[in-house]
Length: 147
Image 1: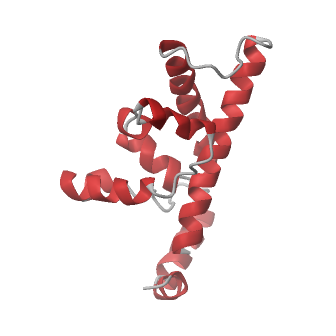
Image 2: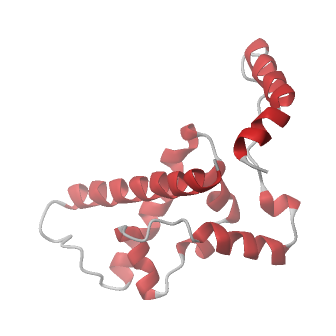
């Protein structure tokens, strides 16, 4: 099924959520999909392998894989799926979690990202921006393929 057909088939449901969200001041809204609650562990792992293919490989964040650090396995499943399918308003909290993980691993593995050149806060801000762009690009890559 393609995206346009899916939207057409779900038009009534989407319209209902839109109307109810507006009439209830946001108390009723469409939930974020939560695959861990819906599918078996084996199928979840297969799904994650597919979704990982859409990670931006040219990002400094992806460099963690060179150290066999798979943040997507270390961080909670809820984090993983919220990053990909959550609302835009959830992105900052998830970027902070990834930033903290990235900074921790830079320190732990003595990775050289010229962090000693400037002010520590500036470096942390740069890593935050890398993580933000990584998440945005990951979402975009996924959406381009399926939408």
